[in-house]
Length: 337
Image (cartoon, rainbow, N blue to C red; front, side, top):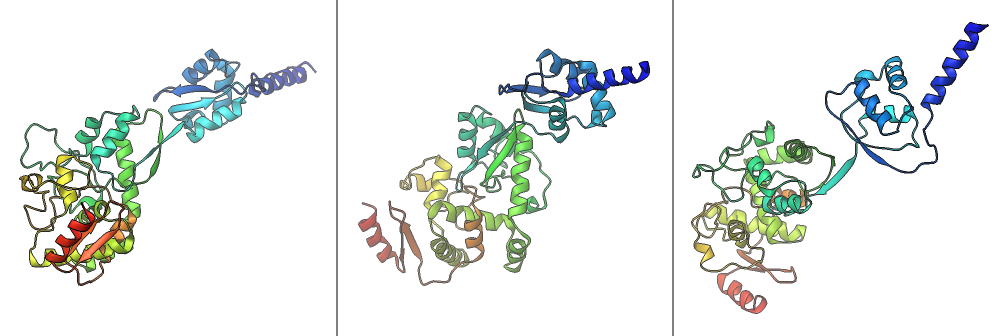
């Protein structure tokens, strides 16, 4: 009889231990599980912050349920209104606090660095040191950190002397509190790997192009025009210019070098000595000038043949196409006053 009473008492204690300390509490507390911490340390800190009743009972529960080796590091939102079962399941599932960052289509690495800095997450230079400084030919510099290597097959045709501009795929990303920048960049690159589908890779190969060339062209389209059909037309124009060795003369490539955000360029700027400058050097720029979205990538691979050789974008975003330089100059005088 005494044995039965003892067992009942033990069960009762365990049941009480599993119940919330304050079932009516809606207060949430940030609780950090540090990498390498075991159930003893975690239980102790939980008891200290009045989230569980007992370190010992916490350890008994996670050991008997097989959760002891599944408790994951990270920052969690916990409440005294949660039961021990709920708390342990959060730890076991890695249900950590998530925050979000959004990379917009057409942002370049400067824009992303400024965005992360304004959010108080990282310094822009931290991103540049990891993913490459904007508009830099690493063959010509000696005072910058070496580019970080990332192992993805889509990067195999990217020259070693340019950074990850173009591959930081525009999207919204969930990140964990305190997550390192390298891990975030890896997740962004993995998203590019998913979004640049097998069909796109097959079409790239069929056209005799590299992924790097496609992304570079797509970045020009992203910065120059708005609608998908206009992007296809401009892709056709730029491809014709490439085929005959004519300079692309894309204003956005010059602005990428200078960091200016207004659409026009000065005559002086068009003379800047940089392989990103498509006024001075024929062919594609040294590398992408922005991070294009799926639509621009699709347009780069699906150019529309057309009779035009010139185009411009009005301040309202409309694209004006011209077949001759004379028509183009008339359009500039009319729309870009």
